Length: 116
Length: 113
Image (cartoon, rainbow over all chains, first blue to last red; front, top):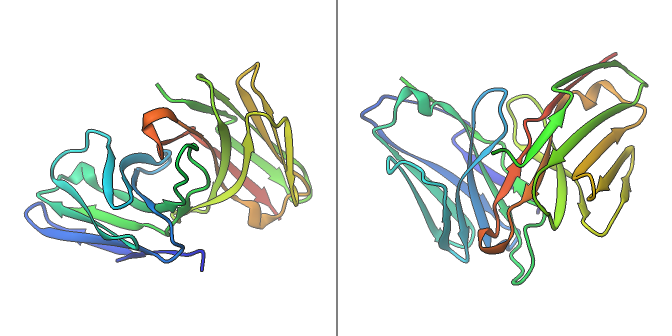
């Protein structure tokens, strides 16, 4: 199974709402990622989890709160978002081999988020 | 600054023609990867070329890497309408930034039937 799943596919929320994005993989990967992608732009890294620990936070505003409850799941909790946070949010995973650099990342289909 | 820069930004060709996309980067790399993204979907990994490799093939794809010029190219031969997508090169930050991939701006490829 080389699939990364993301739910929901689409999400519309108001600026006062709290919502969560979910990501799941069953490839045994120990590194998981959240990216944000605006239209016609490349993905921008937000967070990296390695062995369920947050290893990279790209200075993301605190209204985005990641969580990695176990090695297969990754959540992104959203609170008090702004309209400019509307984007495609992509989850990815990769194997983690100590001492080597980043190899192939497997991406989910994304969640299209609209903040009203 | 963006690690990977790609050109052209957009490429429009007919089915059966070849498509070439280029990527330049700024710092030393361990490997360089190419990804494809169909409109509004997730990215799909196409090929990874390591810094000690000069050329790599996968089906209709050919990737070259010139570390002296800090550049890479992706060639798609005998293109098909289904190849219509955005193509991104990506380079790892390495070091303590394990897991960080920096993507180029991408090339939008349109293949007309």
